[in-house]
Picture 1 (tube, rainbow, N blue to C red):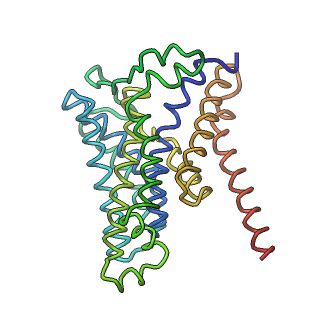
Picture 2 (tube, helix red, strand yellow):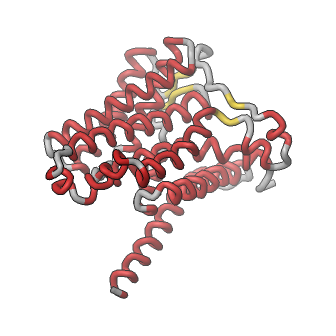
Length: 299
């Protein structure tokens, strides 16, 4: 069967890593930083979550380690891009390459393995049982029994939307992306605002990685972010940093991701099903580009 409760149940778990990274990317986009290192930040978060959980014996320790690791990578990006005036794209590529190499190196040096690390000491994030809500037909498994990061991601989408439009610091963050020099004339440093946005972005991407490594599964595999950071970037560009549209975009890609897994189980070749989210991303980008071109010609 193609559509059933198990398919719907898997959507929130697949949406969450992409949504968290996209929220972080939106903060960077609105602050005027072109950050394409979401993939690397997510990978580092996935590794740090597993390492933190393994050494502390607690999922909370894993989340803390992921937050710290993501923030450090965000700070590294800010140092080279914002304060040393490096090119955003070159710095992003460097961050992505560093994340792949560093996680592979640490996997060997800390755990003595390569490729994959799993251990019974890695505890999974607890799921939230919503009681009677779980008994609702079809939607019950969609709403209940999900990890805390699923609900945190949805809440953050609305909270960051409110922050950007109704909070003084959020308005300053948007001003840093639209006219940094005007912001500087009133005594506010756009560099500090951009650095704050990058720190938050790194932490959010890392939480997305933690959802992958200590919630969806309890292990770390080299390259386990598997392009989800790039999909998050596509959603940010497609929605131009608007949070509520980003939430809908992440739901669409999460559903396509879940469908690709189901189609694989029905016998479709893995190479074809794995490509489905990226085909959708290319299609959406092409349609978005065509719409913008028509608007430009119309004006």
